[in-house]
Image 1 (cartoon, helix red, strand yellow):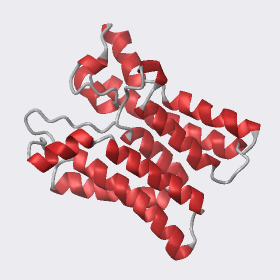
Image 2: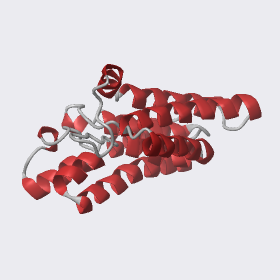
Image 3: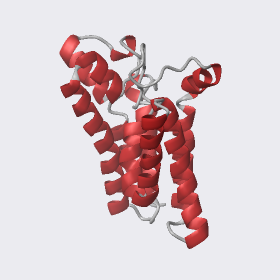
Length: 209
């Protein structure tokens, strides 16, 4: 790695750490979104507590900050895997933002922004798994978990079976998938106990980001 790489990755983290949902809520209400709704800073909680417009803005910006991080790290990084590393740094920033005491979101919207630019085919497969699960079983949290696992597995599978994507990119993608699954630890406990609310059900959390 070069000195430029060592600057690009922290820049990707700091961009990913920008808490747009928190900023919009502060701007609109003066309150901390972490004390509202599900307590999440992501787009879904913003949608529920601040309305469709601010929810959409948060979704687009959370997606975009990871996509931009992938782009500039791939553009100016010295290694072929720098784009993936930049995406991972941005997702880590969203999940653990330094600006908010490292208490952030679940990373699904930012993860999708990174995934689609790192490996579009595995990302499309993961998105398909998410949509099928949500439409059939109706648990958004479970759909997010399965999609994260699917992305990492598909990325590694394509590398091992066909030589697509480099091993560092596959490993970084798999690590991102594991991180996103770990961010749903409370939902996993609820699913195991049978207390996780379904999509649009009473008290549904619908934490996508």
